[in-house]
Length: 165
Image (tube, rainbow, N blue to C red; front, side, top):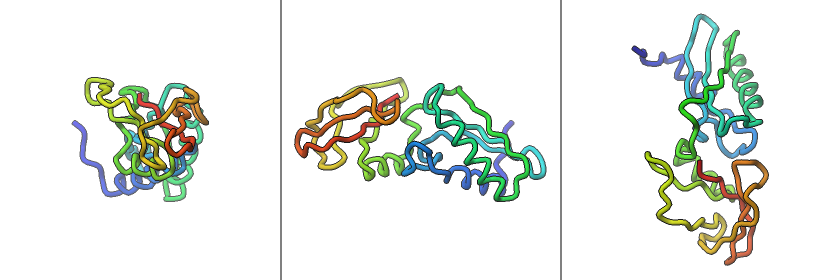
């Protein structure tokens, strides 16, 4: 049986969740949906569970170091960050606020996939600059493996699209 989080655990989870993603600093780890759990294991000791956006994600080390630093600054002497691969992260784990921030930042957010996997009802990728759905794929990979590079044919602006997983 899992007990309800203590007020200190809730506070520490909020602090860890507020850490910005190193590759997409417009998003926090909570908004990205990679912070999976946090529990106190003793006085001044905390364990954090983190799920990368994909296996081998190079940002996991930076995320872990940033979480450790923030929690140590708030009185935790021993911080352990464990990488948890199951259940796998999905773009559905990005919060509504995270999707809004991606679009505001000029990155087309991923489309929701639903509980049974990808269901492509609308294949259009909307331009985050002008809203047009007349976009073209320029490259399957952009600045990171989780994004594709597209161009809007209406406003001619290039933009990243956070790929659905």
